[in-house]
Picture 1 (cartoon, rainbow, N blue to C red):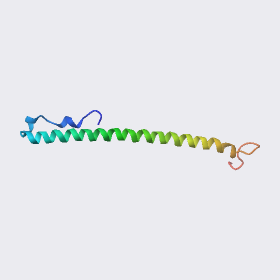
Picture 2 (picture 1 turned 180 degrees about the horizontal axis):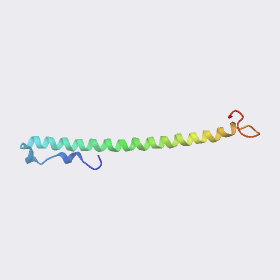
Picture 3 (picture 1 turned 30 degrees about the horizontal axis):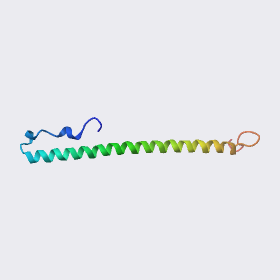
Picture 4 (picture 1 turned 90 degrees about the horizontal axis):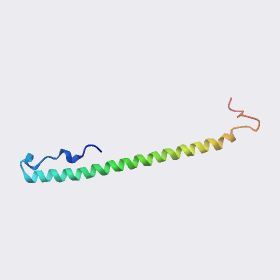
Length: 83
């Protein structure tokens, strides 16, 4: 979507053979291009937010793992229930 604009499918008014039809197609393509642009930027925002969620989950998981590491060890060594 970033490399090919919807307006690129629009043709010159002479290609349509009818000025009103050419104007309608041109207006449609302009609006469609704006909509596609909004969808692409919204998709990028969703991707960014999901990536931040993944990073937060990974950080929380690592914190929990490190916190529980001491709980799973006995005072004399490794976890007696691990074997």
